[in-house]
Length: 485
Image 1 (cartoon, rainbow, N blue to C red):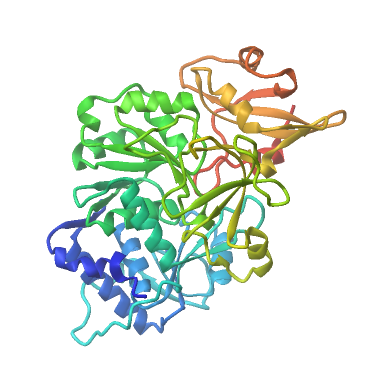
Image 2 (image 1 turned 45 degrees about the horizontal axis):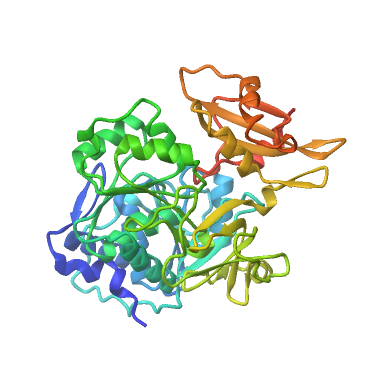
């Protein structure tokens, strides 16, 4: 099956219609298609063929999108590497993926085993003799996205062209995207969220993408006012920062139609504050890299249930199961499992991990969730994050949600600490609004009427910031390594 429908060169007929821009370049669909062909010819000249792996070691910029699609043009596989990685971290991904070429500002690692194509040497146009090969099939691998490694060494998630085609077209439909839509990209393009939500989804319908530089609150609002995007996708921390300096002027956000929140849970309180400040709906979604980005999302047109991540996207099925894999009654807690055309092809060279994660076509997420009577999903917590205090199961997210009801709390994280008597006890780390004064003791008082005694944190630490993994999620593994009472 030809999957060229979401490739840029099929949109070359759109001619001068705006396609992609960053701080240095602005390209129409036709111009972008020419750049993709030129890069594909260069990669082909370096020996890249079908099923070979092409890596990028780049910050967000238009050439990263060019390289992804040039690799796909050859039937090759793309693996974007976090440009903030140390040489050791980059080397692990490059070697594990078997990358044959790196396109970047630097090679990413001092390894002579692969070719390096400097990004400033990418050709502007292909030769007259260039003849691209046949496009890849739906089942061919397209992307290798590496997990954040919160449970060990990062694993390469194999996503096919069929996975990407399904996700990009389903998102475009769910979000009612048209050629008039314009995504503002602020999340990293080495993550599946940015690739699917901000790059491929608008491209399917002929929309456009603006890539901005390093995120800052002032820059964000200046970019929105100047570029007039219609939507953006961000993580809870970014939303907290956007409202940390008060509400923006109506003119600064006038073009926005909606925004998306994903990658980590957001509290009801923060979601309310952001929607009020920006004057637009914020649709909360949920998904994993292993599920090609999104599996559930609140609708733009329809009932949005605050505190849930919405119903399953069309074409996907979500169930809640017990440890034996059997469905639990509606409203009961259990593991979230997912099936559909979005489920990954597997982990690269890790058959045992793949078999443990995808069972009879169902993706086992490791998340604890609840489905309500309308099929809306609420995420309770990660199974591995659960704290067992004296034989009682405690869910950190419930404690975090209670902390988030305090108006001065920007974000928080709760982890388990070893205890001689109870085995484990919850400990909270909290970031508060700049300029406010709040102590751990005051927060403890705030929780007394909101949580049962057994759920109260044994300690609450007010900190300036929380540790994060490469995709911006709070790194609880790092917190557990340093947790104190």
